[in-house]
Length: 600
Ligand code: GTP
Image (cartoon, rainbow, N blue to C red):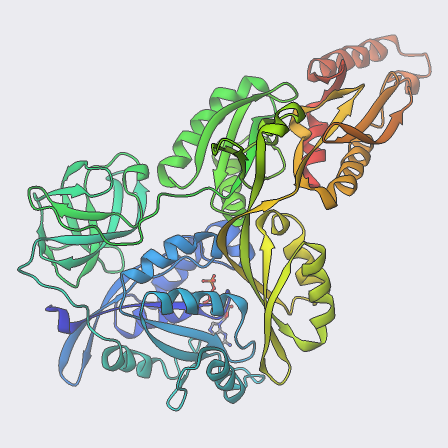
């Protein structure tokens, strides 16, 4: 297939607007998969993907389609369905020339549609808008097409209205892909150059890399060099995803396919990297970024004896997800553990769920934090990934500024919620940039927000205050100076390291009081008096106390059965072993931490 007979495209859509259904229907219409295979694909999804209705790992597939007697190779390059993966999305888009912008005919444009549109626009892709779910009684394709014109200034005269579910209009989608999306430009005789845009770990063959070949030809036995690491690899297998791996003799300019290079970990296969052949270096593709963690959390085994087991589980999981960073850390309250870095909160949740399945034991997570930058007066900078590393007060005179990561957020919602949405963003230190009506009663609002503000309750509040009608998406826009302080929780005057947080000064007292209260609640049964305090930059802002309650486990025994009494006392002793001295001589069961952190 020469480049003019190839089309590389993706589908971008808001969650649940039907991306997977359309992808499956295209594969089915082109005879790439049978109906039975469809069900299997759905069942294979991760639990968290099913529960949240999102796709985490992309599924790329090739198909053959004949139009006007000509045979075409269509490569569907799937993109991960969430903002946490926006870098991965942008690299997948860089491998395409066009994209289908899929919008639900009932729900209309949502925040993720907007974010994805701008990513595709930034990659100069040809955008084909498609309205889906027109089979539904509440579908309003005319209204949605007006929204598409208003928000994206796209021509909607011949817009496709389809039902991915029933198959209505799907044939026309294939025709539009062929007729409208430009073929890839590439030169078969030029030195080989390919973009690495996706990878995964396969237990039998090692790392599988998906590449988009820009120029040249690749064959089994060739030697490839990674422009980023400089490492050289032998091509042991290559081919196309049809829809599973199918070996071919070669991949040419314009093609999209997989290569197996004997890599042992996905850390070697960095998304956005460029491959060239040994001896003929080429210019790397622009836009490469190493994986960048934006959310950090401590992870500790509930039972210290499980530390090695936890480490092994982490090693296994990071083989397949190199975007998670892992560093050892220790805490006086929680013992030996790890500090993990994630691309975002969803990425963190997905990883935790995989870890639970893999590790089969309970872990304690500390509350998530964003990275902060400390800029010293001498120009040096330090990144703080754990509140425990926040500079002590005596260091503050040497500090010029604290910086925190910011995001540009897009919110789309029915106009009756304008007041409550402005209130929500305002209380999360948001700064309004602009707002537009994308139709008679839907508003699109843009806010600049600190990333830390959207880590915890922002999304839940957004949904609950609008009965689920608001959508939100964001992109990172770098760091800005901020008035940050450290909140400590103290037990008998000693700070509990695992409970320290970094917050904006305006939230400090509220956060301090909340944590002190929460700690009090999980500690209610204690054998001697304990003082809980919270401090903001070492200034005590609240105090709670727990009075001594004698916990007599034998009280229910009414004196009679002495063996039963002995048994209970034994059990109490065993229970005490799991207690840990947390701070200030105070002992806390690890379970209390678990309860405490669950609420964060
Ligand atoms: P993620 O990839 O998980 O983000 O979601 P998605 O955009 O792929 O959505 P998916 O294809 O999983 O579809 C979401 C829901 O919409 C499913 O219950 C589909 O059955 C349904 N759906 C998709 N297309 C249509 C359609 O044309 N008509 C109707 N009635 N339902 C549809």
